[in-house]
Image 1 (tube, helix red, strand yellow):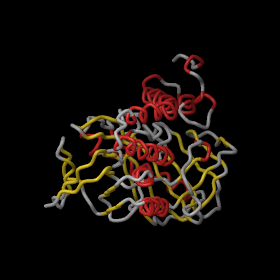
Image 2: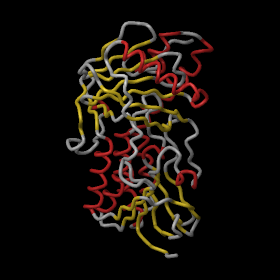
Image 3: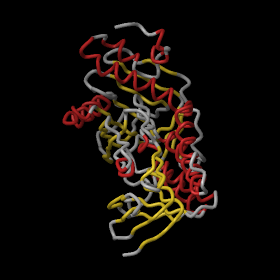
Image 4: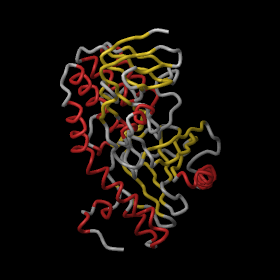
Length: 361
């Protein structure tokens, strides 16, 4: 067994972790980053859409873009679809995107190790890996997803999650819009069809209490689109995963003498309504890497400054989405039907109402 020392240890090498690794390494720090997966971005557990309107830099996408998106079509129960145009965005090859970010981190000087599992995180002892190696760092960045082990170590846990299932299917009709399906039959979430060249990602997210219905929901949606002649009946791939929908957690604490900061899904930064999290992951990862570099150099206040920056930039949108999500959860008890579904989705002006303007139930 060996013990290694470094300035910054990053757990997780998705968009948040890779962005953090690059930022900390560019600041001249020693950086070790580990990920339990065998290669970046695989398996893909993401719908792969990045909305341009989010207004947060997601780096150089050109190497990973597979299709541009111009608009959004929203289907509410049996109503005619509503078109939101423009609603620009990009469909990514998520594995290529993640690999590109990791390549940037390695070029910056970070040591990126895959196929490495964290076994234990101990106060003032370090992080123990599955092979028995212990890594001691001045700063740990937790970028290890919605069920973050690093987050659990400091008491920041995503307790509200949505379970997702997604299939890849042939696309029979060229399409440049994201299709969103809102229905009370998809409790706690929505269905989607996101085109990506000659294929499409088709899936749904649902409250975990109804997870047994998830496969049937996706099968039904798939069959409906096959019947319409829009997609083929072949299933080319299946994936799924959890998305945090409870909003931002406490993203910085001390673990003994070690500073810990969280980024991306580990910090609860995915939008509680849309589930979008790629842009927030890259943004928070860059900030976390910069904060880690400052902390390692003795600027302890950088941890709090990092949290305050995230709350200033992302907090209002996350709070609004969390409020809309709570309304949707209460809809079956209080009624409201399609009006409530529309108020709970970003395509509609009702979603963007200030709290004082909202109608009382």
